[in-house]
Amino acid sequence: MQSRYAAARLLLLGLLWWPVHAPAQESCAPWPGEFSPLPTVSDPDPLRARWAKLRAEQLSQRAARLEERDPIEANRIWQRVLCFEPEAVAAREGALRTRPSTLLRAAEPPRQAVPRAPAPVAARAAPAPPPKPKPKPVRFDEPLRRAEQLIRSARFEEALAEIKELRPRIEAEPGARTSERARLELLAATAHVAFGDEAAARASCERALRSDPALELDAHSTPPKLMRAFEAARAEGERQ
Image (tube, rainbow, N blue to C red; front, top):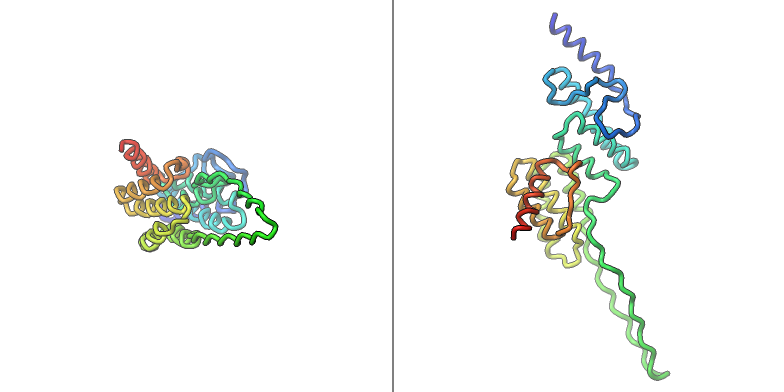
């Protein structure tokens, strides 16, 4: 009798899963067709917790599909996933990745006017040779995206292997951007946090701050463990 009752409740929950088109909300108030109050994956009622887990997985899949064509809507849905599963690393990374503003914004050097060549002293003076073009710095956007994708897929060991191979290349490239160096170390810290290695995560955060002392993280979209490691690294740097 109890098993039939449980099956009936799960069937009722299944009828409530339809695509969400409600406007963005700051709170975790229930959307139309959802339970009130909104359950989480840690709800003491196992059926409500199971529904919250399935709902979070459904919304996560939808947010991932929307990232390319509609990142603003994807961000709204990633934030919604966190209502059901606040500790979901993939959801927090997705919310961070699709934020309207850029997480890492390194200060750009001021533009300087190009000095004009002096006028020739004599009409027959030989023209100055053209300046040699400066070599273009190597960019690391693609390998950083690969490491980020591995983390989003919870393939943390592969992500750390990719980062370990990429780190000396970025350090050896004099033209590497400050944001690239800091981004690499934040990705490493995220993977270390997933393994529970807070000491390694803090060391990566320290390297990120050495690359960009003005670096800031969004407390609302950054996983709490990563935020603690980042703040500990900043405090250690201020003491030195």
